Length: 377
Image (cartoon, rainbow, N blue to C red; front, side):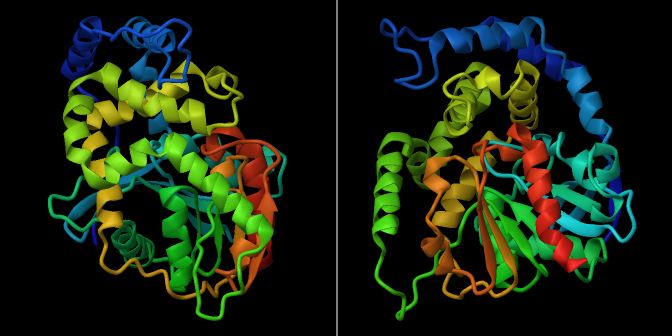
């Protein structure tokens, strides 16, 4: 399978079009002191739109991302975009890292140097990795599938071909959270990856599974409450993503509102999103969705996964697994819940950081990844 180099090059006309659309933003009214209780805070969004239009430098963001070697490989008829950064230490381990939603490979910008060149960032050269960071199909710079069926299970098969057939790694390792965590767990379930590091547990129910513990029941009640309070996006995207996509693909302010709410709500920011992310970080990620017009196709993955006739979750994961959970409460399952799914695993809880851990706490996450995979060198 041929690989061709790739460079991010958004056209000048696309930049002009964005600024024109931002200038015509029409925000809805709101109630007094609404804050974030009803959704994205109106004052925050207005400030973000103004900054995006008047101050944000996409060309600088583009240059930062283009510092990473990027490529395109056609797999199963789809152009798959990926970063491929070689490790600078001896015997670097190949590690595929998979982002989630509403994120992109830009989330890994701070952690990639820590993994590929640990000696320059407080670590040991012998802990280096070759990092492969693909854009999920229909996210960012990977082409969107035109046929139904691109579930997370289907993506897992593409990742196996990318690592083994395209890049020639007979033995590789995997990390991911959110959608990427599900794919990472499946790479372990299929025994395609030699070992995995996942930020979500993959529960499996067996006929001989013990009854739920009190801790599990309490956590599942928390999950249900979270779904009641936060789960509207998930229900919409797994049932009628296309209806929502029309508005988000046409309005940059609408797109920003849909995405930034999740970065504010799901990160470990205490309500202040700027305590974790700069305006440049937020807008780089949002701009990737805008310029590639992939918000609709990214949401369709929820639909395809929810309607996958073969979710492939019946077997325990036998390859060694590290379950490292952020402070995002909905993912912070008890140890005994994770134990239902793995035969050889390590369980850890991050002291800081939420859903976007690679961007929030890159050093903390890099240290845990280095420590876990050291045993496989």
